Every structure is written in C-alpha cells, then in structure tokens.
Image 1 (cartoon, helix red, strand yellow):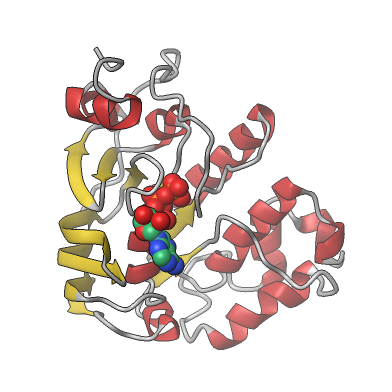
Image 2 (image 1 turned 90 degrees about the vertical axis):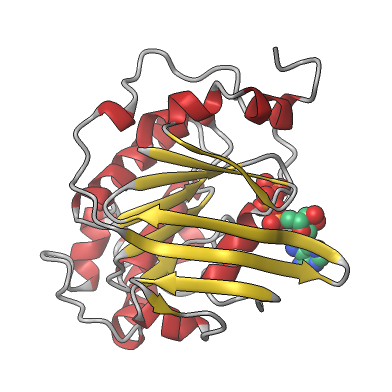
Length: 270
Ligand SMILES: Nc1ncnc2c1ncn2[C@@H]1O[C@H](COP(=O)(O)OP(=O)(O)OP(=O)(O)O)[C@@H](O)[C@H]1O
C-alpha cells in the first residue's frame, strides 16, 4: 500500500539501546528463506531475483523506500501473490505457490496495514474464526489457547464482547496482532503495525510486539519509522527497486551510504 509519509531515517532514537546488542533469544537457522524470488505485475518486476533469509528467534525489520517491494514480498511469501520465479522455504520446506491457508498451517501468519474486520462482529467472534479454522494446535503457545486469553494478552480484555466497529485505531491494530496469534504462528509478519498511531500508542504496540517475541515467535516487521526499527529489531533487510540492497544490524545498515541514498536521494545522503 503506498504511503507518502517520509521515513525518519535521519533520526534513529539515540536513547534506545541497539537491540542487536541485547541478548536475543538463541537463534536457530533460517525460519524463512526466499531464493531468487521474482514477482511481476505485467511488465513491472516488483521483486527481481531477491534472495534473503529470516533467522529463527529474531525480530527482523523489512525496510525500503515507497514502492521498493516490501508489501509484495510479504504478500508473496504468505501465498497471496503468484511467483514468477524462485523458491520460498518455511522451516526448510518448499511452500512456493501454496495457498494462504496452507501457509498459515505451516506456521506463518500475517497482519495487514489496514485492518479489515466486520464492524458488527465482536472481538471474541473475530478471534474465534482462526482458532477454529487455522488448523494449528491452539495450545502450542502456552497460556494463549483461547480467545479470552489472546485478547487479554493483547490488551483487549475489557473489549472482548465489544463490536469491532466501536474499537479505536490502536485497538484495531491490537486485534490484527491478536487474530494472527490465534493462528499459533512460529513466524509473524507485521505490515506497518504502527501506521497512523500516535507516539504513545506506537510505544504501547511496540511493547506488545516484544511480548509476542518473548513467546518464542519470530517476527518480520515492515516499518517506515526508523525509531521502531532501531528499538525492536535484531536485524534489518533493505529492499530497493525490487532488489535486496543491504542486510545486517540496524545501526550498521542505517549508516550505509547506499541505504541513505535510496531513501534520501544522491546529494542529500552525505
Ligand atoms: N497490485 C499491483 N498491481 C500493479 N503494480 C503493483 C501492485 N502492487 C504493487 N505494485 C507495484 O509494485 C512495486 C512494489 O510495490 P510494493 O507495494 O510492494 O512496495 P512497498 O515497498 O510495499 O511500498 P510502500 O512502502 O509504499 O507500501 C511498486 O512499483 C508498485 O506500484
């Protein structure tokens, strides 16, 4: 989804520790890997031979300028867009071209930048659907085996029986995460979970994302706000024009000249 807001790449939050230096959960191998992935809309290659891997146990930031291919990557690995070339592996198994529900069953869930929930359904009803149909062991995540527990974990306990049409933007963001948690994922893809939130609300949602990570869930987060990336992420992957531009620790990647030029343009990045 195009977003015309300028990223604050020039202003990483210096008061926050670099999470790459915090003791992260022990990471295993790659939980998700794409190899030479190409996705096209007619003649436009939105992803052009991208190869990258997402480490198990980490929070990975997926960044890049508007139109660089971030949403296309998330939409493709979650089974919503066809692949023109390349491979997608989840837990080492080939999931290229699999249906979205099969990919959820294989352990990957996602949220959407614009939450779409029927306004007349309650929070409880919305969470009941993936609990019934996601096809994963709902008790895989200890203490998050039913709708009430998931709602409480996401700060939606008092709103459990309220209609979604009555929820605030921040609570709808929480509900997106809760709905994905109800799929009991090993890997959660968050598409701009903080978009449109105030600073205070985004800090709260960042706290929720940390709590989700502490449940042992690996996370990929698309985000334009660099303070979110530097605060939360162990590693960052940068796309530009449908290609992999850089990857590594947030502080290193955000200081990279090519990354700064991709965001700010040549002549403004030095
Ligand atoms: N459904 C579509 N039909 C045609 N072109 C598309 C479609 N979706 C994306 N594109 C194009 O593919 C390219 C990558 O878009 P994508 O939305 O993946 O970028 P992005 O990095 O997520 O951008 P943003 O930060 O603005 O959300 C862009 O040139 C975009 O215009």
